[in-house]
Length: 356
Image 1 (cartoon, rainbow, N blue to C red):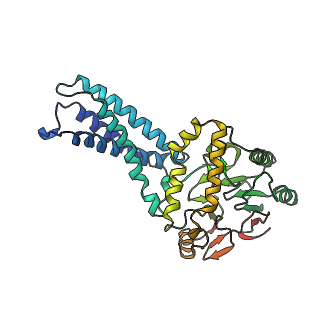
Image 2 (image 1 turned 45 degrees about the vertical axis):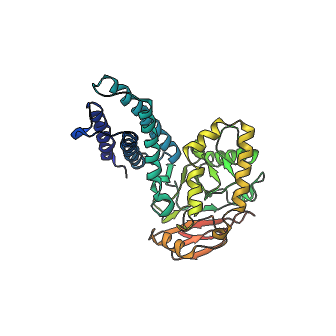
């Protein structure tokens, strides 16, 4: 639900900054020697960045966090530069480059502070987003569920299943490839073939959704290929008692992964990939895939049963699905789907999940 009234908050903070800048000294005659004056700048602009990010999050659920953060940081930095220029005309005030740097740094720290709960809690709305249509034309159709196929160059089992069930819709629950970075020039032949397959299915009138996992990065540029694309928590089909997420964010105790998840989907990393030569970016992508295979094994080898049950019970009245764990588990109303690496797909049929 959009909350347009939240725009009052960043507008109020911005207005307060304008008012403070128009004064010849701080209210009450307060004098702040360096570096306290810079800390004051950083604090005020940190608050501005935090409330602006919160407002965008609640009113633009289609924006991935990295894009939202880049927009907020750019807006705050430009606003800070404008504010410093305005102070040139205020008696007793000076325009200093260091103040603008403090403004920009404060904006970055405000975004960082707003992201800290994403490391420790299940309050993950700030990193969750989705675009498209979450309602199928015909809910009576089979919905084929594909979790973690980890394809390379071969789309194992995909065309065979499509031939057996030509009328079915499709939902992919993440980790479609070993690693998939949605930057121009970084798609592989297998990824291009998959997108062409999706286009063909949709041209035939079938619904196809993709919910991103921990091996997909910056894929929102491909959202138009799918009926629905999303990330984080909150996946659901309208009019059907089916909800989902990839599963990588279920375990709140796995803080090492939570931190990596934030860093690897951040605005600075997106900018770095955009500036890299294509060959370098592909080598970095391959390195990331190798690291994903060998790190944090203590949490990868144990199914977080109690955390999974809690996540499922938070979506009552639905069948709650995840992939990610590469094992078929059932807890309360939750089902962790089996690894689809060898074409082991499942199906949502008649309000139940079954083998294909």
